[in-house]
Length: 385
Image (cartoon, rainbow, N blue to C red):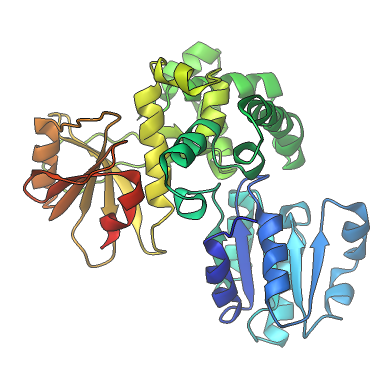
C-alpha cells in the first residue's frame, strides 16, 4: 500500500467540516483512499458504492435511509450518479452540524461543484486526488523514469512490466470514452472524442488554438471548446492559464493545454519505451507537463499556478503564487546542462520575482544567475520555502 499524501488532510477536514469531498479521475485511487480512511478513524462508518445496484437501491428514499445514520460517517462513492442527493444533504446536515457527517467521492468536477457549491455552501470542503506523485512513490532515478513513462494511475504505475502498463492505459482510454463519458450524460461519439484527445496529445504543452483544431476535426470552434471542457472537467486535461500582471504589456491570453497524466499522453502518442520517448519530438513538452503536475500537486489550497508570456518574447513556463509572497519563477528544461533565454530574465524582471528555479533531470542544484538555481525533481519543495 502506497500512502497518499492527501489522507491526513482529509481526516483533518473530517474533524472540521460536515461534508468532505474527494474529487479526481476514474481509477485514480479515490475508493482505496476512502477505505483506508474508513479503517483509520475511530467513528462508525458505512460505505456506499453507487455503481453497485444494491447500494443505489438503498437510496430510493435517501432521506429515510440516511436519517438512520446520524452518528455515522457515510461514505458515498460516485455520487454524481445520484444528483438528487445534493439538495437533500444540506437539510440533513443542518439538523446536526457536527463535522464528519459525509465523505463524498466523485469523478465529474463540473456537476459536483455546480450542484453542491450552491446547496452545501459553508458546509463542504473539496480535495482533489491526483495520480501518484514523486512525493508519494519516491524520487530516485528509476522511480522518476517509471512515473514519467507509465504515469501515476496506480494500476499503470504498479504494473509488472511496460507491456502490462500500456495495456492498462489503452483499456482505460477505451473505457473512459465508451462507458464513463456516456454515464455522465455527455453525448459525444467516442471515435470523435478520441481523435480530439489524440490531437491534444500532439499539441501537449502548446497554446490552445480552437480554430486550428476545429478545422482538423471538421467541426466548429464551439464544439472543440466543449470537447476540451469535458476532458478538463473529468481531470484528463489541464488548461494552464496565463498570468496577467502588467496591463501595459501585450500578453498572451490563450491557455496552454496539457494531458495531465504523462502515461496517458505516451499511450496516445504510441510511445512504448523510454528509448522511444527520448526519440520523440514531444519529449521536451512531455517532461514539462510531468514537472508541472509534480509542482502543482504540492500547492497549498490558496496557491495558484500560471504561465507567463508576452508578445515581445518574455516567457516563464510556470509562475507560482502563494498568498502574500512574491511570484516564484519555474522554468523547465529537459537537458543535463540547462540554460535560460533572455526572455526568461525579462519575464523574471517583469514579475519582480525574488527567486527562480530551472527544473531539470539532473541531481545537483547550483546557481545560474542571481537568485535563480537549477533544481532536480527531488528538491521541488524548495520552490515553496
